[in-house]
Length: 59
Image 1 (cartoon, rainbow, N blue to C red):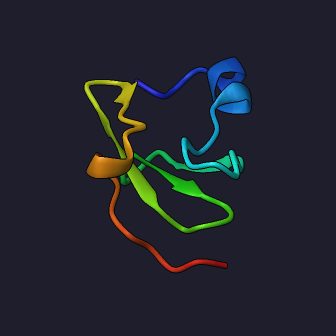
Image 2 (tube, one colour; image 1 turned 60 degrees about the vertical axis):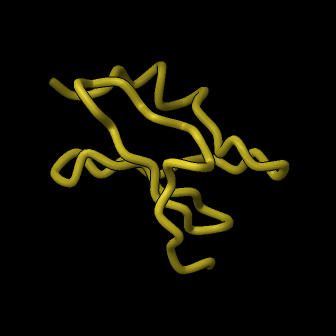
């Protein structure tokens, strides 16, 4: 199941910059557009915890 578009519009990175997130439906991840952290989606639930994020490439 894909995430609801309205939900995707309001989700933001939990870090202090609160940047928007890019959704990758195939990988089931959300990626911060500012810091590059990658947040997993498990059982259709975005896991927006900094401790659970994978460090990605900052843009």
